[in-house]
Image (tube, rainbow, N blue to C red):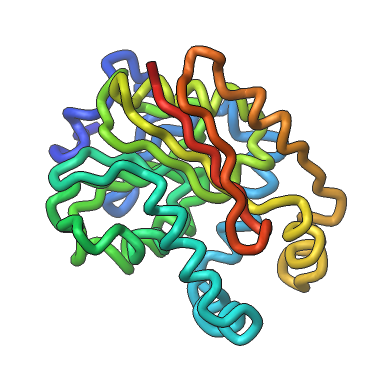
Length: 248
């Protein structure tokens, strides 16, 4: 198949052609090894939620939480080291909501953005919202097998999802692999308290999250000892955490 020109420079050389496809401008690289278990469960959930996802946060979320969600996203995005012209990888991009909160002193249109997600439904939503606003390429893949080249991206971050990835340690290792040496990375997601108070009570998500439990220490311990400046930040009245660490 023909690799999209804007993605070709950032892809690794040893991709398995059997996993490659292209659907409506979205590159697909789906390794079946990572399409079962929790990955498959939550992929299907977010494919279903995608059409209403932004509406839910914009209106239902606003009625319940006011401007506090936007404040949290803004604070979270400021934990990264933004610079004009940067090559940026957003793992678990979802609908790309966080692009609204790129710091104001950065020219968002100068960024070379790549978004990866296991949910094709969410990627299609991101494509619809952002394709004419930003230089954004989208890849349908599992976080545990990113199709990108080593040491390529200036900024690498993940928001939402890692709590229930099938292999958290491998996903973090993949993020580190594709980041340039010296890069500060970030992984962020909801705390267990928020999962219990929101996802386990919401009619659209309570079935999928009925028995969902995760250990924050497991994720912290999955970050390799070789990284530097490791910090865990708690945001939004402890409903959200963001871990930052620097690649050696």
